[in-house]
Image (cartoon, rainbow, N blue to C red; front, top):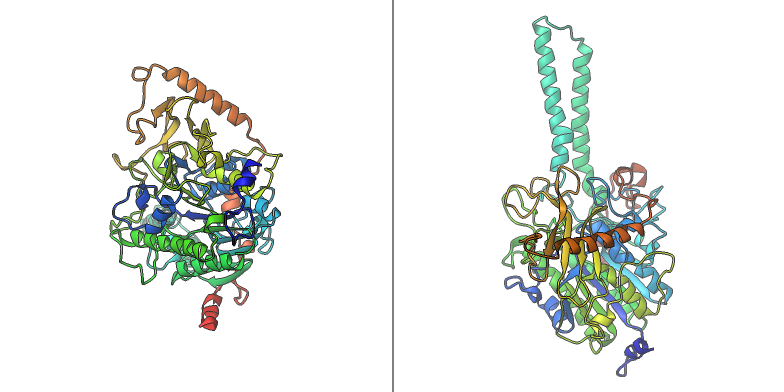
Length: 577
């Protein structure tokens, strides 16, 4: 009853009591990038005005430091290991659109819950949670199967390979799968040829022919990959239809923003959920003519400032339609900035994680501490700053309760309703413990004891940064979670983030008298948490589920075979003009 009174319209012009929900998620944005989090050189006036008009969370955390598992947790309010959306192997995200893994149909997203309450729902931008299961038209993992009425965006993610001239993320794979085998074959041919000439070994001509055919096959596969990867994996969809293949980056942010504001205008009279999932600022970087070469931080800064413009367009249309006072707006990033994004020329293409260590793909604070901004005029106090541990999983129960939807009672929900904290009804986060996963491996535990200002964090293992002294894993492009790439700690590495947020000085029994007791309590919490996990959850990121499968490949209707070329976007723009 008390929450219902808060949702009562406060002035003429409101046609419904339940708030609209606008969720804005950046891709790979660091907590040190927005001005409201301390950046003095990047211009983010719209993200900053969102923060000044609402609450800024300073200890807001991604449930995972990688795109796919983080977004799965965000959508479901659950740790990604519960849905099988956390990898046990080297590859932790989907790279191919024609993979068979994805967010299982049995999972309940906040979009499903809000749709059941009469909300109109839309996802604009990046999905990255799978598409098909058994054939190219079952769309079992597609956004429209997970509660969204409308989808306009990209089904996987933006990569350097999607933009000609921006390099490749597959350099290591090319080396080990093509160039090294070619060198081995070449050496074998020379050796066998020499032995044959010297009369030391009889080598049938068929052996040389077979080796040459193997060389030709490897080169053919490389050429096919270079030629077909972009159109087969970098494309734009509207609902179930491919509309632009390959994807064009020309005015892409403007097109996505226009879709978002159009959705708001079309549904201004009824409750709506808009999830604007930005393609910025993941590489390959892109920006329109109005923003290119205008920032002080190269292509990355241009992308951030263009994304900020898009945020402003959404806020402006809410003001124009007099919806701002009845709309909860949330801005965040899926995880920390990718510090290893450096071009062959030495140009830094990753963002800033501020004072925090590490970044994308690891659970140092720089990888998981993200912007968290909430605005709801008249309900959330303007200019509020909250330094309590919260998670992107908390959005699920928060918006479900605001929409009047009960939570599913047949599964564990790890998120907590944030409204009591945002409204000042409580000063403490409901998360006494939070668990940080590196893919599917429990990596660290966070403990915020009742009646204490301390925030303890214990690492079971940490990534091996390289080269020595670096703040990331530059030789592998991202830090890996497997043995050989991590250092295991017995006892666990312990920090108090309330006094050491940069995680510079691990505590010891000599520097912290309660050392053993703190670790014991955290281990007991980890054991209780592990007991709630199901052992028979299908692994959606297994090798078999992440490989490219030709029979799952989606192409635009007008194309044939694997040519996959079309541009309905250009035709639509021509018609409008």
